[in-house]
Image (cartoon, rainbow, N blue to C red; front, side, top):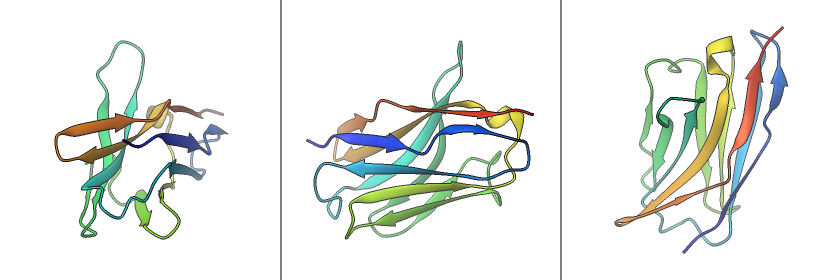
Amino acid sequence: QVQLVESGGGLVQPGGSLRLSCAASRSIFSIDAMGWYRQTPGTERELVAVITNGGDRNYADSVKDRFNIFRDNAENTVDLRMNSLKPEDTAVYYCHARMNEYHYWGQGTQVTVSS
C-alpha cells in the first residue's frame, strides 16, 4: 500500500506556472508507474502525465510541450511542472500510483487558472 499527498495547487493567471508535488508514504522505487490525472465537475478523470519506474513519460496531447513530469526515487516524490497555463487547465489534480493491478490515489489539489 501507499498513501499519496498532493501539494502546490492554487490560483494562477493565464500564462503562468505552477508546480504540483506528490509525496508518497513509502519508497516509490518499485512502483510501476506514477502520474497525474485531473477532473472537472461532470467529467471523467483524465490522464495528464505519467512516468514509469524506467523513466518513460507520456503526456496528454493537450499538455504536451507545456507540462513536465519528474520522478525522484530518493525523495519518493513525483512533481508536475506546469507552464503556459490556460483556463482550460482548471481542474482538481490527482496523484496516482500503480503497483501491479493495484491503483492508489491522492486526495486531489485544486488548480484554478483565471485572470
